[in-house]
Image (cartoon, rainbow, N blue to C red; front, side):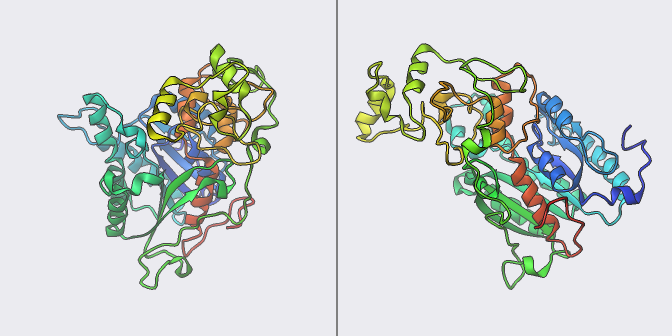
Length: 420
């Protein structure tokens, strides 16, 4: 039964704390957080159709019609002669119909737009040499926030929430974050921005992110202003109701598996295989320590020749986290799209009886996805790691969605267990 044909009463829709659209939804980390914050998510929008099955099967609304969230496989850019695949006009028409339907049923329920654009244009990895086609794609992606702002201008949601890498504020990226904020201010929003660490929001991971919260200026609670001129919104840098969660606490309950193995009973509890040399390296590593161990192991010097050359030239040890194990009593390092590979960071399992990188399931848990959030394809490794590493941690999205809605003068009923 679709929203367009179902009989939904205003009282039923009113059970939602807010209604939302999730732009650049990917595998659904933000959407999961919005639902957990008491929201009803109308649709997720992303042009990567590989995420659709994961997104739809894991995100079922918990109010109104209890339906799976729609996945709109659409491109937010306008169609042009140079870029004919743009679908902005069609997407605006689709959103117009969906929002009209739900707002007609619930006139007092606020709307939130989550705009968490892909972060690749704003990371150090984007410095790598790219093909002309990929360069053009990166240039378009760097304008995603401003393209999404056109939807804010068109539909005027009460709230906007955005998350991206900490470095997005760096001037070398063209001031896109500040320009996005300025655009929202011109549209009548009060905005606030802060770089936060996810470990302070109950996520078992050290992951610094830029957060932007925007609320329509005519609806902001006075105590949420950060300045006397009422031009900036307060943005918290921690959740007072959460605590720091360690790696061992988060993933220690999962059964042991080896490198290149999987567990039939736990979806995505699957690891990448390792060469004999890398097995020797990780078997020699101790939890939480650097990779200096590689110079002197029972198997001899296992250091990479390229690392030795760089270390000698710079007279300092570099790349100290690769081929190492996580510390069991601390949050994990940042989970990336290469989180299944011990050659790409401190992604070795903390248990010295398990000579392997973390599994996809473990990576998802460290991103604060629940144990039963299943990523597809089930037999996939690289594509699933990409989805997990690119995701917004659900707990982070949940907190800031809750914070945004409680910044409105007319506060909606709180989600179960939410006291912010």
